[in-house]
Image (cartoon, rainbow, N blue to C red):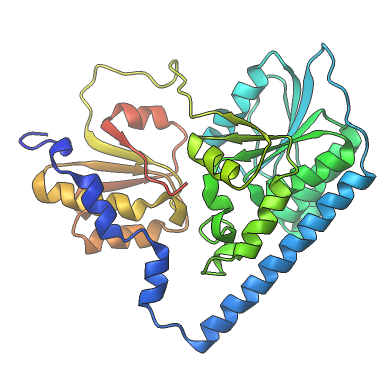
Length: 349
């Protein structure tokens, strides 16, 4: 790019202001119909009762469960579950665990295909069960059954709802240590998860301190919590959680992601799921500010999700369609990154 540089545009501050990130202001600015108030009330009651059931179940599991299996010199066996939307996500989280000398075997309970990884064994729920009750319930039931049958040393779930809660219950019943992978950060719990990706909690639309309290009561039962940054650790510490915390920020595979000598075609690249939490809307508004000052800027968005059509419409409304290319879901992200000058990541987590 010639002329002004992106660093001169002060886009972060301006885009944050234009995006109106404070959701409570959005809700307050719109009139709420009586029907919508009733729906909110229903989902608040549902979330409160569901979390009460989770607290009771996890407590009972601790009373009737097996004793913890000791970890010997041969290493530990780990069983995990999560939604895992893409192969890149699986590789980023499972490969480092499997390569650890302390890990002798790793089971992954999933409904999506788990790629071949040394020491990793995939467990899939029966197809008839998936058709009968759905992908997520069948996966969680299979996870519970497999934990009781194989008795790993450690069980873990990615995101507190529903995988983390399933992990703490399965761990207590099977005599395994439980790990909560807080990949979504404090938003998974704060205000009762109303800002998280859990659709049932998002439907509350307004914060619920009681739901947050009950989520924390479950999290208190984990032996270990793994976070992506220190913000989540501070949040949980302030809430009285005394689990063993480990901060594992994103690493870079320098064999796969390496610079090349070709001239990049795109100026900015963003990769991620096109969902509310990732705040691609903020990125598009930032791109608009850049385009106003640097008209020749070229932008790439690699990822797929339920907001794809909405974000394309937003790009059209901002008159930046000719500057932004939506590449869709991509497994070979390294090739796209090598074609770009600057990597951008927006997220509320």
